[in-house]
Length: 110
Length: 114
Image 1 (tube, each protein chain N blue to C red):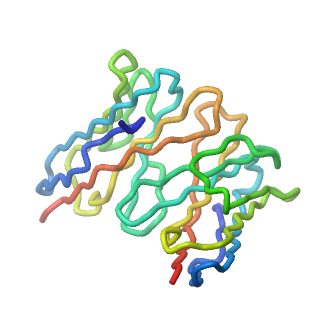
Image 2: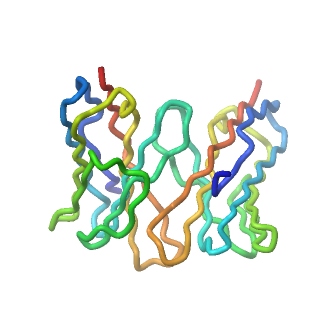
């Protein structure tokens, strides 16, 4: 079992839809959490950090549930340009390791 | 703003050859990470350096080695290349002192082993 797991998708949604992704992690020592976005054959780009109280950045909302060991990403009013792979990233306390999930593919359809 | 710089962008090698990938972190960043991403795979952590010392090790083969130099740039040396080493290699950097330190990635080096 991978340390960080995501549903690979693809999630095919129409423009304007709201879509949510979940990510589960198995190591309770995990300390920091992030969502990255990756376009095909490009580098991962930081979308947002995930804070315990939940946080929002425009159309994007991230939540952390430490008790159940999962994080989520909600995208409202999807745009065609949101089509990408969304990677959940977890950093363990006291290490320099950032562990990536397998990614969830999103396709926003016109 | 300056980003993470990787070179070369593309590299073609034959089996059993060696390759060296270079990474220049964002100025003032003190930690460098190397990741390998195969086709359709998630990035796999290879190794990291903090203040020129190896700080953590992941699934890096013994045929690979890396180091961080006094100017904080890093090089990943790969020897006895195999077909399975063909992948995108990303370097990332961060500033350790910041809590919730974020990783910033370079554009990657596409290595093809023929």
